[in-house]
Amino acid sequence: MSKILVTGGAGFIGANFVHYWRGEYPADVLVVLDALTYAGNPASLEAVKEQAGFHFVHGNILDQALVEGLLREHEIDTIVHFAAESHVDRSIHGPDAFIETNIVGTHSMLKAAREVWLAGSGREHRFHHVSTDEVYGSLGPADPPFTETTAYAPNSPYSASKASSDHLVRSYHHTYGLQVSTSNCSNNYGPYQFPEKLIPLIIVNILAGKPLPVYGDGQNIRDWLYVDDHCRGIDLILKKGEVGGVYNIGGNNEWTNIDIVKLVCALMDECFARDEALNVRFPAAPEVVGRQAESLITYVKDRPGHDRRYAIDAAKCRAELGYVPRESFATGIRKTIAWMLENESWWRAVMDGSYRNWLDSHYGRMRRG
Ligand code: NAD
Ligand code: DAU
Image 1 (cartoon, rainbow, N blue to C red):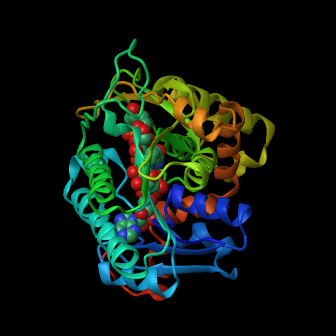
Image 2: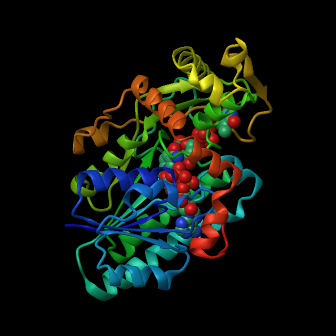
């Protein structure tokens, strides 16, 4: 049985990881540590919150004493470190929080792990650091995909902060012998994603009849992976990955942004054609007045420093861990749209901030992003 501390478990991938892990390993203990910034939502953990062996702690990864206390109290043997500021646009407008959480916060986690696991208990342990393909920078159209040995070339404050945290994790392995692993994953999509990211943003804007903002010429390319496949990749790394190892996880699924937006538009049109109740629930949607969702596409000013293309070479994961994504994009994107349509109250609450009042009454007012 494992006892796992999941940082950022109330965020998009962290919450999916919790659901994945509870499904696969129900006897394991999971402790979620999350500061509940704008991106963290305990409602994403509603289904597991009363389960035996699950604990939610409202707190900050920068609080080293708190983390050390959790590692000791729950005899944690594994940390899966998701907590981060994750949105590139926010990092452009306000980089400080990214430096604080992603760099100083990760360092605080490493110090706590070293103190408890190396100086203290001496138990077998693993510190798994969840990182991103953005640390490798931007690819040209004919460049081969990123491998684990591609040189780091981060271009945004977000990716620079993640790159820095990757280096810190590596250094704690080489210098102190902390048993670490790192995964660098491509763009995730799926349930519980905050609607500031491209796919959920497009879905909610169609439902509200709002413009669908496409940055620049819409030809930037991302490699999309269903979030459960990311979680399974981390699982395999924890079980079979080498200590000190770095693994790229990706979907082998490159799309230009404009093609993704057009696909989501077409699938949303299909949903409205199939289900008349949607016309009543979402009266501002273009389909209600006989227009297609694509009519909302609006090209807007490009993101500064916008990386042109990301693509992951997941050969190492495949060869060493037997990793292959299970979800096809055709099914994953439909599942994601269906989830958004079935969970309107979740995304409305995170978008209008109304769940903040609930948070304040349950957790008190602490600093949130
Ligand atoms: P997210 O923004 O949805 O969630 C981040 C979570 O971390 C939130 O619950 C937030 O409250 C919490 N958090 C933020 N600062 C904290 C702090 N100081 N202390 C404790 N908790 C804090 O992010 P996500 O999209 O789920 O990404 C999770 C991780 O995966 C990040 O490290 C990100 O860099 C990485 N990643 C994301 C993607 C992607 O496509 N979303 C792809 C590859 C890697
Ligand atoms: O590659 C992994 C990364 O993917 C993660 O590390 C990040 O945490 C995650 O946010 C994501 O970063 P991106 O910047 O690629 O994701 P985002 O959803 O913000 O944007 C996807 C693409 O769509 C990108 O090229 C910018 C573009 N875009 C985005 C938004 C929000 C638009 O054209 N319009 C938009 O409104």
